[in-house]
Image 1: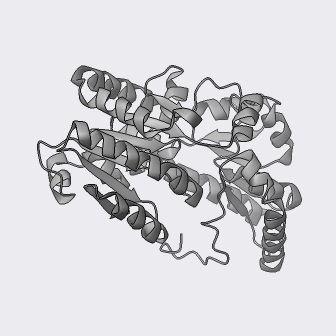
Image 2: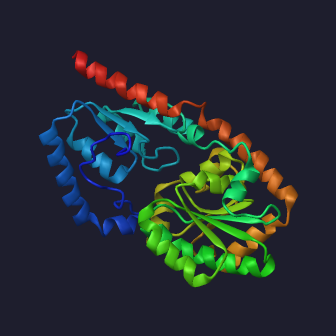
Image 3: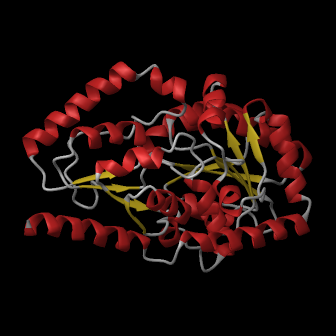
Length: 339
């Protein structure tokens, strides 16, 4: 946003928290942040409030600022959620822009003002014209197996998942000495932490900044944290293993509040297990290495997974999702101006 000319009043990139317990322990901090943002909005008096994801915080803003026209891009998950969250959000009167069709259907049933605009990854996750050139640019020999390591985009995820991924890489190297590892930095601010972890291992890991899609395109298999990266990998038909690590209390609460059978987005979209999912105790170097080696050694299984991923991404909508979302925001803003 800053690069596009947005005036950033508060830097929020480190606010993300994974887990219910983890968020609960930070409630006093988030209460102060909420007061800060409410004060900024009151002083700036905007014509429209555009909320993006971040449900725990943004819903509090929406409830307190109902006097303003609000567009919520990527509203809170309603599909597969117990307690009829959609029915509680619908009366807030926001224009909701969903990136999954099943989320739009859930909100529409509750009477919300909602539109399905498609997933932005469809616009962003384009494969390279020459995969071999990307591999060479990343220093991967033509005949070397390449494993992508994507531990997530939050401090909490990187500290919890990257050591396990590197441990798996060490075991894979014992079985496949020629394997290479590619690790994209979600942000330069993680550089010191990530380079320190990688340096202590002495593994052939190439750390690159801001080239996650190149890493996904160049890799034969990726190990990725659950989240948007799984969809970007799916759009490139890159085989993957999805990992998720949270506290035991968060794990229990998640099973209580949702009825979903899967956590990985490709599996949710397909309503079946296309890619392996590993949680909590199963996220260990031995299990991860075994899953990666099984995929690397089975060409037919990788091809089957690629084909299934291609099929599942059709549910994400046509290209142009970002432009459609922008047009929706402009429409609401113009309606406010007309009034």
